[in-house]
Image (cartoon, rainbow, N blue to C red):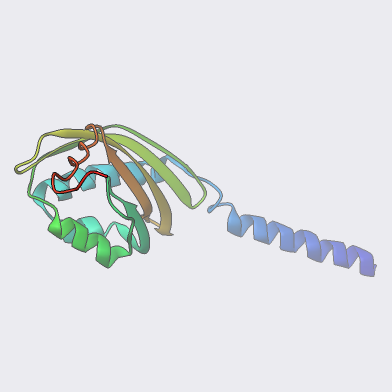
Length: 163
């Protein structure tokens, strides 16, 4: 009798746990749509120069990897990066792909950008998202890089003495 009651308690607890965790183990079509919408809102925010809203898509502890620069840690530093960015004349994303499992998702896209006094550039990115509430996803890591060739190395200094 005690063994039967013990098994019943374990089974009941297991079913209750499974019921509580089943939502977090699924990445639904609605989740995919929410994550995909962050790509669209990023285009809009960057095009408008709304760096505050753009940085608001990131978690407080996010890490951002811009091309040819050091990693940027935290939403405040990411906001400062955006605010220091040259004026954006054109910005677009395409070839957006999103995957996810449970409370994590990741996405990739191609990017085209034209900033003031700089050549147009294309690039690619990968972004990692975390569920931050029932209907909210936030960026926890992002990295993008340029398709432009690297800048040439500076010429050797003419003031160096041979030898």
